Amino acid sequence: MQIRRRPPNPAIAVEALSYRITADDAEPRNILEKIVWHKDKEVDKMREVVPLAELRKQLNDMPAPLNFLEALRRGKTSPALIAEVKKASPSKGVFREPFNPVEIARAYEAAGASCLSVLTDVAFFQGSFEYLKQIRQAVQIPLLCKDFVLAPYQIFLARSRGADAVLLIAAILPDRDLTYFLKIAKSVGMTALVEVHTLAELDRVLALPEVELVGINNRNLEDFSVSLDVTCDLIAQRQEAISEKEISIVSESGLHTPADVQTVANAGATAVLIGESLIKEDPSEPAFDSEQARMKAKVSVLFGAE
Image 1 (cartoon, rainbow, N blue to C red):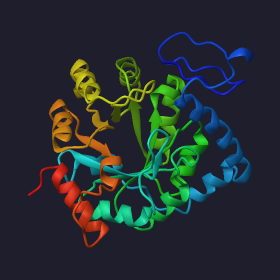
Image 2 (image 1 turned 180 degrees about the horizontal axis):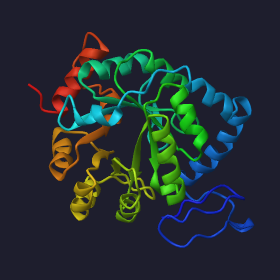
Image 3 (image 1 turned 30 degrees about the vertical axis):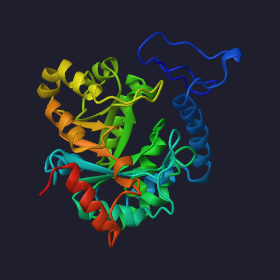
Image 4 (image 1 turned 60 degrees about the vertical axis):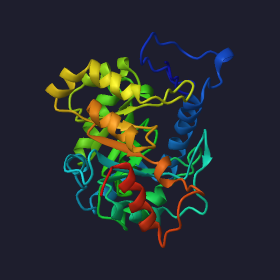
């Protein structure tokens, strides 16, 4: 799959030959490409409001980031849970209305999440860097800024708002950028979760230095279908390399039942990232006194707790 950058930027050669976008082919071909092109413009506007030099100054007054990877390795559940604060998605619309990100984050922490993932993309996921900032002030566990990172600026922005980790998506970043962004994240004390969707992407990532945490997304980026076989197959095919490099694996998307969680854990995932199945309210659920009680019950079921 090729994800092209907005003209006049060159295309990203992720699995095949790269080519430039011509005037006759100047519209995004799929939702991920649409998001990437929009994000390019969004980052340009952000730089105009707060220059990179100013962001970097802001980091001088911040406490050291929490250790995201270590929190997963110490997991409060097995596998460790990264619970996602996610209001909406392009394919499924709004998951929760009204949406109180701080209340949800606190409920996740009380329910046993090792870390949290916070959507910060505004246009497609109705997220916010303000949510990230508010949540950082409300919880004591590490936070992942989940966005479509295309520039170093976004890493510094994420850290300035309290993120301890940042998502890097192999499908939209060439190896040169991945290597550079990994170094930037490390330089400010952040963990990088490098996300892959295919065996070709995993092979690219395994060849890079400084990769410690890999997310395997079970969602097909072309048709948005989901299969847990993606996690199972990719780990099975590259188990030796994953073990040799001591890489921790996070399984993402499509985890709705205890059987789903157990399937990817048996395959070798040491953590799972779950959003929709936790955050979405089900009319058939029993009544709970609080969001925390509701979340504790859901996590207990998913992870087989007594």
